[in-house]
Image (tube, rainbow, N blue to C red; front, top):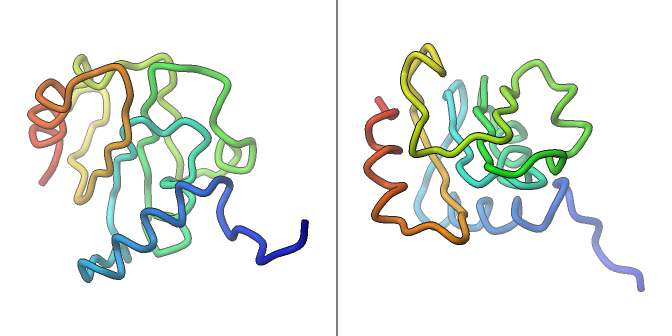
Length: 118
């Protein structure tokens, strides 16, 4: 099947790209956090839209695309539950966070995300 190639490592990047356009979000020169990174579609979208660093956080492992693992702007935090991440782990606050998680309530994720944001 032929079609338009996806510009990101997964279709997740298309979801974030659409949301950024709808809400007028710009990530140029921002430090970002991708909570529930998986393959890294959101991470890839953030980078392609000017993010200077992305903390890619996921409880799973071995999922983040090789291209992103090799990128010095990506901090791969696999086998990491966001509930236990502290500022000591990241050494800096993020300017933007995306959340795409399963099997955990946003009631647990969002307060922690807020704690790690500027």
